[in-house]
Image (cartoon, rainbow, N blue to C red; front, side, top):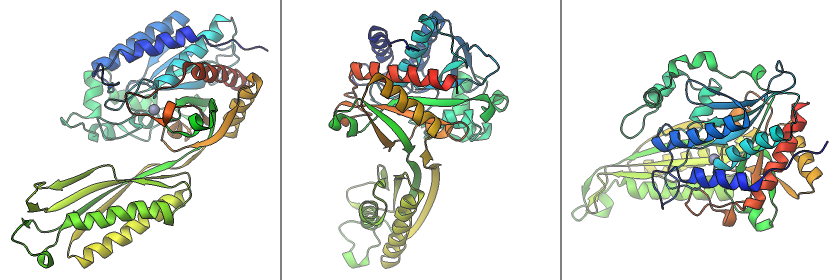
Length: 415
Ligand SMILES: [Zn+2]
């Protein structure tokens, strides 16, 4: 059977329109979940979904699903989609590419008069990025029951507004979420198409990446306490300076990830704060985060172990106190062979070159993999840049990705 082709002009129109819904026009895409821009973007998409004849539903935390009916309505649907929230000053393709391709895939199938065996559904997860409530993947975690209503109440933005409260103000009823949790039997399989957000596909000049695994991630929060004192009057040997201690521990983060962990382990100290944070005062305390990721849990654990040893040693040497808290954000995920094979054969039928690769970034797909066979399709990020206004993916590559998505959805709909 010949599958329909994605239409580039519709894809381009969607991307261009979605890009207008930002709270920082001219300075990238800033579209926080439940914001005015978020609502406008969803309004536009819902209109487009209705045009395709999809049946739309919204759950109590704001997950949008839009169904193209299948021949057999009793069968569980095949899901495809991503997110439309963004980081501050992010790009126009992260998340949006997957949502737009899902919409175009269903539109092309519907337009060609094809009725798939199973229903096909576009899904848009709220709160994927986590810049406002501090928890990436909060939407898919609520959808799959990992986060309960109490947890949504505890996730707060800088103004002290919880995700629960924000959802209420947006007109949702998060208290009703327990009855809407997605179970394994509710879904047949899931594909998330996403931009790669790294340099591999672009440098290799390959238009598609079939993802075989998604790196797991842990966050560690380290607090080192010392004694605040005068920067001029306190001789070096009488200091217990948490900043100097933190510097040694932070160097160990990089060293451990490079030389003491796995080949693909990455670790980042991306946030540091210091009190009282003044140029002429030895700090009282320094706090920093460590983000560690790997496709193997052992790589993550090796970094955390090495950093903990260093922290104990540095603090003992320098009369500092410390606290360390570890939080598992996601386990490493192996993509389902069912979905990986469907993507590979769809790319093969089209004659598109593809690379089998892992995802270093986390995605809702990693959460969905806990309840259903899940896979991901990557498209090249020009120059490997993402989470910046310059983020771009060639529209020709998006069409290729959408065509592969159409083929894989059709195959999974009969599996
Ligand atoms: Zn994303």
